[in-house]
Length: 460
Ligand SMILES: *Cc1c(COP(=O)(O)O)cnc(C)c1O
Picture 1 (cartoon, protein in one colour):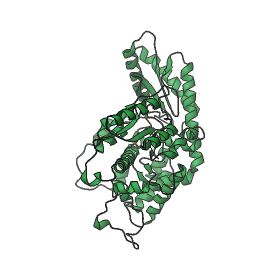
Picture 2: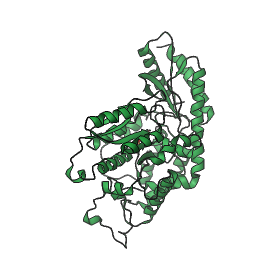
Picture 3: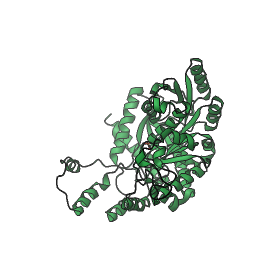
Picture 4: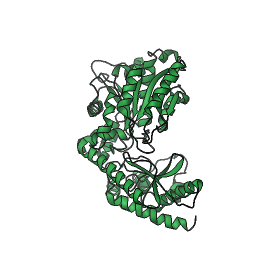
């Protein structure tokens, strides 16, 4: 298995980006629950058969959605984590010290005080729920934790470009997704600050209770970064919690190109982000960073008798993760994060991010110069949204053509873009959060678009 995995990593540039799983292997995975076991070497072969059929994000020309490319060195951490089979709900054992060190590193990275707390989680979606629960409970002086009441009046603010996980968090927390006000964006796809102030004033006048602003560092559609410093000023003036969704963009704090635009991050009350995106830690690994350890703990802590800590023995260790999130048993994700920073260092990770931004900017320039391509949003970070245009077509034909073009490109195996809507128009969306991508891959993408347009035109 180790040999197969290493070969997979070594040959990641060769072959197709994405290949649909062959029918034969799909069928092999419809058999009923095994009553008897199988020899491990046969199990290994079955798993090895699977290796070529990942989503494609380890390939340098995977440009879909926002996926990290992963790192081979992480495999040694996963092997060790599997051997230890550690449970990081709490207690005093080696793995806990690694996670605590990761938390300290993240505090340092974002210039948060020593009193801030954090938790390694599976991804930004759950990190967002944890951060907003802390914000909500703090706004209600934690009374709601027992009574479940007094939620109906709370409202929060974010932009129309914010990831759907924020509205989902409002829903899951019982606030209702309508309590999340979607503020329009300006021409740079950043939250419109005047509209935000107006919305807060309107809700206050109506007797509602604004409690949080959710800013975005790297929006999922076009990669925009809100004016975080001004959001912090507004939040401070109105006594609101400032949460930042930095799922992929927060990693830009390590990049010389992006760091100046992320200054406001250090003023946030909480940040949610992923290690599995631009930090290139293998899936899955995310983080929630919360300025006030006290609020964070008071939003989650409720240990039953059988989990009570001790001052000595295995039940010791002051910090138990179970007090900071909804999960008790947790795997040793912190080790692959620790491995990544230890092997590569933050400078190299930052350089990879800068490289990706410059590749996206280069693509934006090429699109601008291309007669038949139209840029649909400014390139702010790693994302470039554009579409193919033909003067003879109306809006719905253009949408249909670009949708089909992306499917053809995905099926080609040469490049994988995805689609989104920008101002109601179907966009070919290229996101470059991949340390393996080089400039040549961008040229190949453009060539492949031209070639597929030609073929598609003849049948459209
Ligand atoms: C990916 C992403 C999320 C969701 O993160 P998961 O790790 O998939 O839960 C949220 N916000 C933004 C901006 C993202 O790019």
